[in-house]
Image (cartoon, one colour):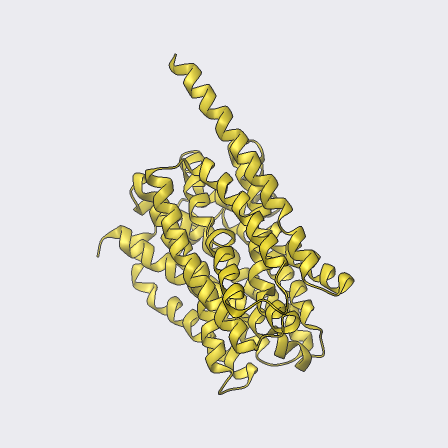
Length: 407
């Protein structure tokens, strides 16, 4: 197997496993929350805390990927995600927050490690496709969480079901060990340094890099909008369908799983399109406007909407709201300074995960305040619309500049 395929296999498997762990609580929320003495909309706080943990984790480790080793970092991520699922399965309310932090630790390590591996081992002219395939791990993970839990919950308690989901994390940690020698670069010389200064550089270096470059800054800010919309869709879809639209939890979980199949195909398709036909920046703008339209459609569903309408809307959201990431990472790899992809990834990921933290918390508060999911869903269309327009404007300006230079 070529280096590129090994790199893709390891990063894709890791993305799937950590995504399963992070999204299992959203599927379990309607039945697990009452068992813990909590309202179901509190899943927004759980997801928000997990993404807060992921924000700072990614920011710190992105500065040290080459020293730690990208595959070793991936293995640490698997163990942290498994720990989070184990804590959640104990059915103790005071362990919910540590579980969220552990899952965030795992999720925050995967992208900087994967960016380092894929950038060094895949062809530059195929990065859109490779990053898109790797990012299919997110919808595959969400879909696996929904599908497996819809089956497991028919046979086991939610606690045991949660515990069984840590098996993929442990399997990836073990099976990725043989690839370390082939995928990790040489370790840099490490000299003694001031610990406080090293930590400060880890936190601020990636952010300075991103905020100091107009292209990286635009990508980071747009990822805030897109990720907050995506996380709200994935986190609350099952609760929305079950609690407000009065569908069975099995149907809601299966719709979530099915939507992720669509988004998996969508990520690969959009990545191929960005490599061949449409500039990534322009495509990201068009996807942002499409996300806004789909979230508005989702907000208009009612108790009288047929199953076909529910499924069609969820699939349309999946093809846009959950399918932008591969194009985004390919554009990030293109815009990042040479040799600084991990740092650029860590800095933009901080902003991306900030959206993942803030979005579900505000969404949950919106549900509690309005007593409905419809209004928060409608508000979710505003940010991607604004981000999409900013991409289209930047693409138009850049195109005009290139035409002027050619004359």
